[in-house]
Length: 383
Ligand SMILES: NC(=O)c1ccc[n+]([C@@H]2O[C@H](COP(=O)([O-])OP(=O)(O)OC[C@H]3O[C@@H](n4cnc5c(N)ncnc54)[C@H](O)[C@@H]3O)[C@@H](O)[C@H]2O)c1
Ligand SMILES: [Zn+2]
Image 1 (cartoon, helix red, strand yellow):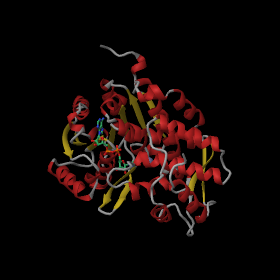
Image 2: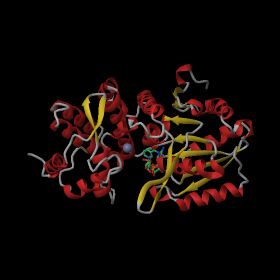
Image 3: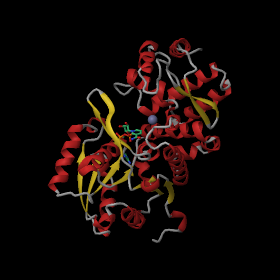
Image 4: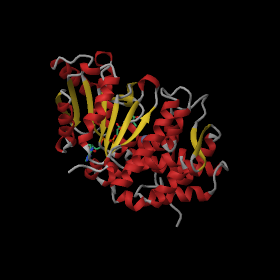
């Protein structure tokens, strides 16, 4: 059945000079992928010389229709694809898996025109992107993110990389894709917990950059949780637009502007690192509690009123995200924050809200303020 015009993908441009590209946000509509991809390939150095592709996915996503839909779209452009499936999970995001993928590229006689397509969550995007960035000094990359987190965050911005056994995301590069294809219908298969983790980053965009977007999340919360396609398309497209705008002003994290994306992440990372092992806090959940804790700190500095934190907490609650760190040990949290890469001159730097839609990077909080805050927040919850 022909699809109506409303079903045409929404396009979000990412403006990065000669590395500019488009993000398509579709609801199904895979028939439109070849027409979207062809000009993107022709703008890239792969051009008409692209005859082969490596589709990378994980064993969960391999059971879903998306790798096959990508292969079909590539086939219609005369591109022959082989698919490589790695085990799901963070453990695949390492140098050993990357080395195996380099061998597969050699075995298929890949050259600089071979397209790498990452079909999956952030693990597959970061790993596939890293392989694309490094094999033969750079292959063209198409991102097809299938988790909400990957759609609104990891597939936008060009950061790719792998983990070392003891340090996450430490080996990597900036490598922009030639295009990103997002099908929000893929979110229907996503477990609730994974959807909620992506929603934490969506809420973050409202707080840091767009008060009206935050209002709309409050108004539309039920439809978002019910995975209504129009709502999902709207929040994914707006989140991509907001991140793309930041990235286009600070592509390589040089001016400090990209730091705004770290709201909730300083305390969040500390929570993830100290309490997250064993699955107590996934990344998005740690970011949710981190945003609430950092909002409390902004209250103590007189930057926002109590109503600000109450409003943020209420929305995160509605999205089923945790908002409290009561019961955690404050000591290791503070130690972990002291190691944050934003810190300068021995002072802990955080991104804190001034008002809805606006945050600032600051070192205004003394270590003693932070210690008091964490002692209070980690204590038993008030009755
Ligand atoms: N590069 C960046 O800028 C950036 C930003 C944020 C996060 N990240 C990275 O992203 C990774 C986390 O990404 P993630 O949360 O997507 O994790 P993930 O890739 O592990 O995916 C989560 C789970 O969902 C499954 N899955 C994927 N799509 C699905 C679908 N449509 N239906 C059902 N299940 C599906 C996966 O198989 C996996 O089991 C981390 O490694 C993190 O470091 C990178
Ligand atoms: Zn995050």
